Image (cartoon, rainbow, N blue to C red; front, side, top):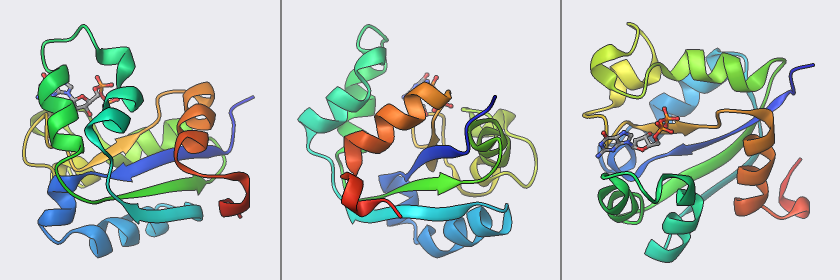
Length: 139
Ligand code: GDP
């Protein structure tokens, strides 16, 4: 059975471009409840750990540099079928391929600076949520 939680980050580019409010509104309008949230900045080391699965990819260095370049909003979201429904809400990794009206189609500027993160499985949603939040910070 699909889980009911996913993890997201509003990435530094979207924060710099002033899209925090609009993206949170889009998330709420999509039926997701925020059960944990913080405004924070990843160190290069923490960003490297978070994206360790991409270590061998050619864009890894660029990704780590970007994700640690400024503040992010990290959040855990709740909804039935959260992981899949949130991936639908945000759209494809490359904003040029993201469906019209999705968060990435509206607020991303490139495949690297693609506005938001969304977990790709229930297992990763739990790992990524715990990476950013203590149990006492989840409601
Ligand atoms: P996601 O699950 O849709 O976020 O996509 P992936 O797991 O494939 O990639 C993780 C993140 O790496 C993406 O959200 C992008 O920020 C970044 N990324 C993926 N492909 C590229 C690329 O070709 N170039 C750059 N610069 N970044 C990329």
